[in-house]
Length: 241
Ligand SMILES: NC(=O)c1ccc[n+]([C@@H]2O[C@H](COP(=O)([O-])OP(=O)(O)OC[C@H]3O[C@@H](n4cnc5c(N)ncnc54)[C@H](OP(=O)(O)O)[C@@H]3O)[C@@H](O)[C@H]2O)c1
Image (cartoon, rainbow, N blue to C red; front, side, top):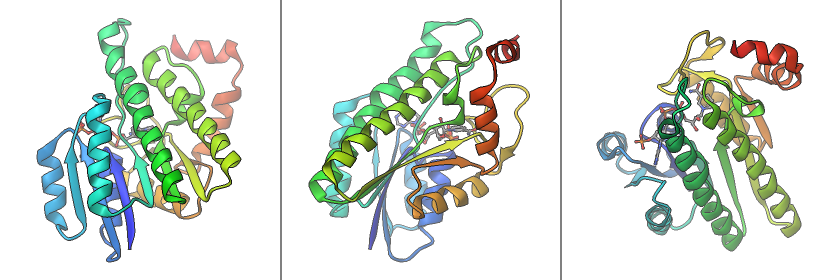
């Protein structure tokens, strides 16, 4: 029986992954998010497969306790998918708009990653997969905190990979970097190559199965991400004008 924990399963990518994994019989899935009613609806779709804990991950003490309870009820976790995240366009550079991205994508996110890594190290095996973003490869004038928080996540995962390599444990880290996926999170003008959620999630599941280190979603975003990363400043800065 595979035991999967999905953080941020109340909507979008996390919810779609939860429903996709629940199609398999031999699986137990723990789900979290703040919106309790949405978790209850998800669990009601396959009560024999799901366990839930409603929690705000910016309350790191409560979040760690919720993860402990879920892992206890599931008798271990083989795969933790960290999908939770937030971010808003911030043309006024209002700190109040930036704060939720910092609190969720950096403070809460780090607490969940550290919990997962220590859990897998104690257990002797495991797989951590976090949904970061191709946006984290460069800064963003439209949503500075969001892109910067995603850069933090990508860098942090690399650090965790280095830590694990030193321990020679079968614990794997997969950094999933979507371009645009058709969820509430995809905001702003001029979005392109927006993937349907199901297509993105099928590719995410495949990348996790293949234990990839980094995966761009959808796959063609690998090329776009490379161009974006290497775009000279004279062109990159004009994109924000
Ligand atoms: N959609 C895109 O185009 C795109 C592109 C690149 C990367 N991503 C990344 O993909 C991930 C999933 O986003 P999505 O597109 O599926 O958007 P979404 O539908 O808005 O999902 C975000 C999830 O994060 C959870 N969440 C947010 N703040 C939280 C908090 N403080 N505590 C606990 N849970 C919290 C939400 O649950 P509650 O609101 O119930 O708490 C929800 O389940 C995010 O990390 C996002 O940055 C998305």
